[in-house]
Length: 121
Image 1 (tube, rainbow, N blue to C red):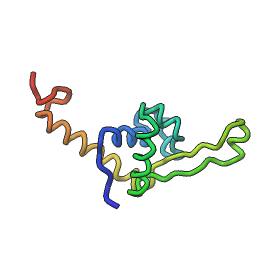
Image 2 (image 1 turned 45 degrees about the horizontal axis):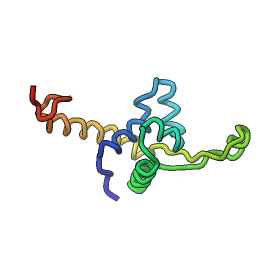
Image 3 (image 1 turned 45 degrees about the vertical axis):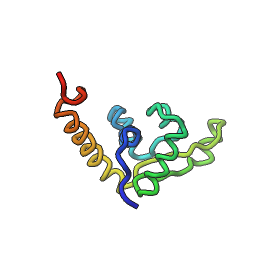
């Protein structure tokens, strides 16, 4: 499947899965174990009806993998198992490049003046 379209929502989710909004220690954990659905929804402020189809498109493109946490972890905490999402090796390699290209593209569309529509003063 082709690389995913870099919509603003896709960029937000990729940044979260890259741990870009976390400190160094948390970032390593995000890259290693991923984020579970509710945690990802809270971090991105995206509703489930937007988030989960987007994650599925990223999974089909080979950028994201999903997995269930171990039963014993959930049982020890007295809650249902969580489904985690993390970047694959392919996603970890391509996501930063795609985000950089999307940022450069949006900056050039704004006349080289980030934050100002049409580059107007």
